[in-house]
Image (cartoon, rainbow, N blue to C red; front, side, top):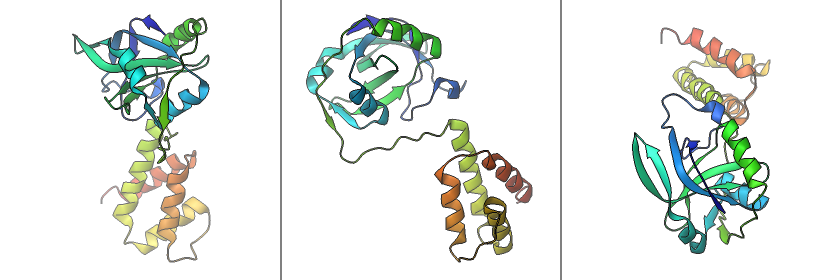
Length: 211
């Protein structure tokens, strides 16, 4: 593990790629923090938030991170960057080792730190895997926004059988033959994102314009 400096982060309970960051996000700078190289399996647990760090590693990073937030320099009690030879993530932790927030890095800084990471040794980290695993959302913020908007507008129309059956047809290219068709439609919309979502939302906007 080594110290690194001036790393831009966007800490959140969700994990957004840098190209999904918004101007309204609380973008901050880690003025000083540890970079720790870990095994790929440990990194995957950090990304998916399925890990509790042992107190020994927590003590080694305690109060070692300085963050510039709202033009004030503050100390983060438990924070570090974790890397493999291919990826880097920033994490903050509670006193019992659970992840509080995570952040990807901007591309230029990630590439620079990956180059640095290749020259340091892996740290053997003790940890506990969570049994009730958190499943990360692989959709982008914009995709989630579109899906959530579709769900809200569908909820407005849920009592209009004629319109909802028409929307079912627009989504599946066939009319429903099941009384549970709205649940089937909703599950399909939320399952994975495709280019059909934007088209479907445009139809919903027209239908709900005056509602």
